Length: 286
Figure 1: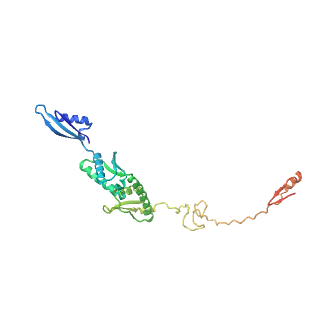
Figure 2: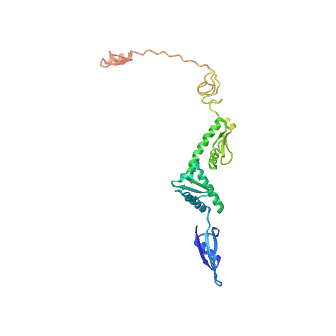
């Protein structure tokens, strides 16, 4: 934080000079009169200090906490439109993350308390280490979809283990657009959990393979063929049952092979015996 002392003939002049040198506005600083002197020509010394922003308070608190814990880790912060994002890096980052991010959540909660106490926080503060939250989001999203399929197929509720608020938000977001299941949070902190409940009406309305409308396996009525209207019975193109009986094809008799070709015999008489001809399975020479 920037700080400066200015001596001028009045408080207003000293403050104006300090703001000009610091490049700040009046609402961004705190001004305090340090000394006044002179009877005829008054001199006023004003101390002007830049106000701590939520961003400064957050990063100072986190770095101080890391130092007090004796960990080899550093924190950097960036400001975006929706939140302040704090990134942790170093060999002891895993210690700050903890089991399933429990230590990380505690640090984030303490940072929010400190910033709210000393400044007006207008954005969220999100602390992450080595992209842990992004990786955890991918894992939880896959798990949520897998359990949603299980709940929809069995028609029974699926209860997940207790999760922190971050993980519960990931589950809710992953299944927000699923029309076959709904999610609800139950229980009390810190043992609050999510229940995935099947929407039985929507699930029963799904088109099933091999229904009465024809399809790959057709209907379950056994008439004529193995199935009615499917690939394995009825008409070949699968549009219903064929009323005509299936006719068995008779085996064809094999015709005896021509062991002697008259055309070749005539050619032989014309051209002479200089060539050999092969007929059928055996050779005959003339």
